[in-house]
Amino acid sequence: MEQLSPNSLAFIALVNEYCGNLEHAPSLERGTFVHNMAKLLPRIYISALDLPEPVVIDDVEIPPALDETQYDLVRSRLAALLGEDDVYLEVFMDDMKYSDSPIATSISENLADLYQVFYDLLAAVRDLDATVQRELLVRCREDFDGYWSQKLCNVLRAVNNIMTATADDDDMLY
Image (cartoon, rainbow, N blue to C red):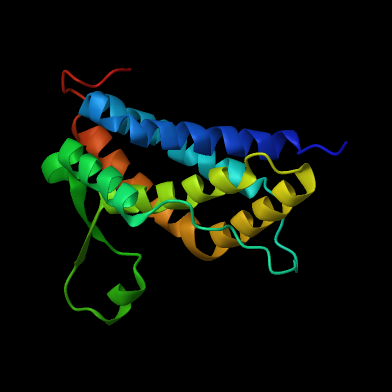
């Protein structure tokens, strides 16, 4: 029986951990959550680079599993947890090329966007054989290259900013 590579299994485990952190964010201290994201996001990025390279595949898509209500709940809880630090200026948005003024975005929205990608993937790969799982991971890698890698890097920069600005706060756990 065919199995997934250790790198693919590691990626699935990391995105599962990420989703769990977002789902349990309301029960965490702000500093703990920020620290968790600062550790997880780069590991997910590196692990995604180890996924199978995109190739021409049949119309394999990762079906949506996360509904809008669930997405909004995760995003709003993150926004409440992050408070005034949720909004940051983004310089890597396509719209920025044509703008004379800074464009604001939010950590909560970007983390929720990543949550949607990962949640959908986890729901899709569950209980499938390794061949189909591998095809879905190839699609995920393609989506990484074209969409969510930049989003992950952008939000990591904002998370790092909070972490370094509040390194002396009492709620930071190291």
